[in-house]
Length: 585
Image (cartoon, rainbow, N blue to C red; front, side, top):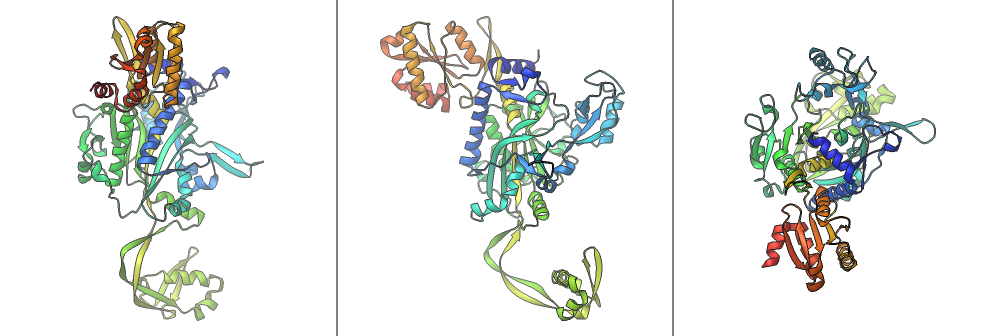
């Protein structure tokens, strides 16, 4: 049994994850978050909110999970949001074609369909379903969006959103006014997204319904230095630049291509495009470490030129090393330039540019074109307005010669030069209109949850017995404290229940457990990641003290009941040993 099977087995047995629709046989690509999993998910989302909403000051919004077709026409999803699909003629099962050649090349998703098919044939890839060889047809494109209709009939087409981002772009005008028409500003959203995956066969790594936490940070395209970059510039991250990926295997050892640099060095050496992007790489690292990702199994891989989105200046994936699947992307951090707002402006016919005021007004020389509309009007009639608009937009170099050529509705028109005058004027300009660029960190919450489960899991042998432990950070653990009477006796149960109620009143999520021996109860709570156990014994009845046991070290201290809530709070915030040491002073 590999670690993936251990983790999924534990998750199903102890109430983290359950297969959806299991009563009816289930279907791939869907999971339920069971009681402990739902709590773990909420804690991770809440930490994300603390960092991005409270600390960064990015307000959160919520937009519909269904969007009208026009949104996805503008974003390009209806045209190009697809994966390569291949079908086996032996069993009629469809597969995502690039997944069949994972391990043969490092970035199979960047290859064209013809190259994927060539590699499948060349390496004799077997059908995962029936084992057939040479039974695969050609590779085709499969659009991943779930299509639906809005209202009765099929008049208005809609789609389940494949990402939360578009709702934030569509709301840009409102958001810009909300932020008092000042850049930069950020907005966040945590919510469901949907992708009709061809063959989801990696558990919670690849789902058809999943949760994203995304921030869209709108910035001045000419100012990509982050105002707080100095606070993080010394942070060291593990970078896997595009230039190094041709040479290394990316595993992380000698010659792997992974380099460790400070954020400042990464920007100064032009490995990361600019400070704003580097800042959010560091913020991503801090978040992932905080929720339980092992920094030694985390890297930031830069997209290579043949996989970089056409709208991106630079794009990095935070990837974690897993036991079964190797390196898995869990966060994408991209500079999306002005692509999204420009595209929505073009399709909606709305001006989404913003005015950036200069610190001091500038004197600017410009050309004023004056068409003779007394002649142009009668000559071009219905097109006169279009002709005028085209002429006044010309520069001085376009106004030379005997005729001026302009394009109207795809047709070239020649205007006599003597019908157009122009002059040079000096104007005071107080600002310029620009379309903001967007920095986007996009977090796959479900993948992060799996990675946190795997990275926190360990098997330990204690006194000849195997102890399964989830070493979650205390603020992430679904159950923060287990309250355990030493024995199942009324004189111990009553004060234990009182203590559990008092801790709950202080905002601590408590599990009360009086079933089985105290050793078994410790092991049960270790396995679900409960960081602290409070044991009530007969000394409690004599001196009003209880034992706090630490999950990781299994060390124990006794504290007065009156100090218990404060001590637990300190341990959740600062750790068992730090809080215990400070208490003993």
